[in-house]
Every structure is written in C-alpha cells, then in structure tokens.
Image (cartoon, rainbow, N blue to C red):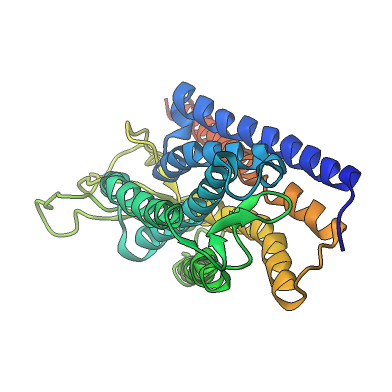
Length: 346
C-alpha cells in the first residue's frame, strides 16, 4: 500500500506539531529548573539533564518526512537517523536512572548528596551507550542492503533491510522498560509494606520516615531516630533526644536542605514510565507489523506513530511541572502549619 502525497503531508504536519509541543515541554523544564529552587531535587535534576537530550530528539522528529523524501543517502536522512537512534534510547536510559534513584532511596536510604554524586556516572554511561552505536551505524554500508539508516516513510531510522540491528539494538530499550517497571513495582510494594506495618496506633493518619545522616557518627546510643510526620519524606538529620519541656514538641522541622518526598520518588518515575510506554507503544506495533507484513503501510498507524512518537519532551515537561508544583504546595502547607503551631505554643 502506497501513501498518497496528501497522506504523507498530513503525517509530516502532525509530527511537526507534536515536535513543537515537545520542544516547549523541554524549555519549560529548563526554565523551571533554572528559575525556581522547588524544582531541584535529585530526580528533577535527572529530568533537567534529559531535557537537553529531548531537544535533540525533537529536532529529529521535526525533520519528519523531509528525511525520507531527501533520499536514504542524503545527509539529512543520515542525520535524522542518527538523532532518532541516539536520543530516544537515551530517554529510556534516563528514565531507568530515575527508577534506580528511587530504588536506592527506598532500599538503601541514599540521601540527596549521595544521589547527586551518581549524576556524572549516569551522564557518562547514558551518553556512551546511546552515542557509540548511533555513530557506528553511520559508517556501516552493505552493497545489498545499503546504509543502516534509511527511510521508514515517516522519518529516517534504522532501515527495514537491517532486521537484526533493528531488533537487537533499537528494541534493547524495551528490556529497560521492563526493568523500570520491576524497580517501580518493588519500590511501591516496599513503601506500602513500611507504611502499613510500621504505622503507630496513636497516629493512624501518619507515616513513618527513616532519618539518616550521611557521614555522621552518633555521639551516644539512640541518637538516630525515626521521625513521624503527616507526609512521608526522607530527611537528613541527626539530633539528640529532646529534654522534657512544658511545651509540646513540634513534629515539623525547618531544614536548609529540602526534604525529598517518598511519594514523589515513587510517583514521578512511575508517571515517566507510563509516558515512556505511551511513546514507544505505537512505534513498536508499527515495526512488528512491518516485520510480519513487509510493504504494508497503514496510514492510521503511521499517523499515530508520528504523533505519539514525537511527544517525549511534552510528557516529560507536563510531569515535571505537575509533580514539582505538588511538592511546592506541600512544603507551603507544612510551613504554614509550622508557624501556626509556634503561635499556638507561644
């Protein structure tokens, strides 16, 4: 089935419109991170780094059908193929890094400083794993199959003639999706177990938070304490047991270092996983369909791939701002409660 010029044009327009949305989403992430301290938690930092990768991804999808129309051997097609090989894979790996951070917080009690130490490692590994194969593919050419990067109707990517590379290296991120889902599921189960098993009878609406101080030594036994709050948070603090006082103790502490919400650590990677699954689902269906039925090009499926496959930056921006605003509102409410309690005590 051959697409008409009108159908190809509509696919191109759809891809460019959604690419613009993704570019706006990426710039929203960068702007919010740069302008507000409420968007600088370790997971927000990972999303900030990924925003630059999403921008390049959007450049590739913005080229849209112009890549295939220029010809498989054209510089435009080869550039588009390189971009759409490297940066979608990097997006998957950054999401995996978020899931890994969640795992380290929940199971190994990593603090914000420890997580930030991992960022250079993430940056080096993700860039290398995504860049090296994409670059090597530019120089692979076969007389029978041509270049690795070639036309896929809606854009240039790994050519259907290179089936093995398409399956092994392009779909390798699918296994990362599975790992992310496994990590997120384990984190959710562990967190639910903690909250249900450790909740005190006298505080049915509360939740338990383990407070850990990195590189600190307690001066006496019992210095490290569990702190019960109305919102779960990982907070780095070491303090001695308070002496008896005529005033009731304040459960809320103002700290210079921002609290990292357990709920935020679970919710944000889970939402990013769902957004990632949405953007990968239709391209996967399209490639499986092309493998089973070579030569078939369903217009509706290609239109869906062009639309959904170009929205990575958009979804990332929406989730980044939404979760960040919820965290900001929660901290504002905590500050209000803190000042109210101080007034009541005095």
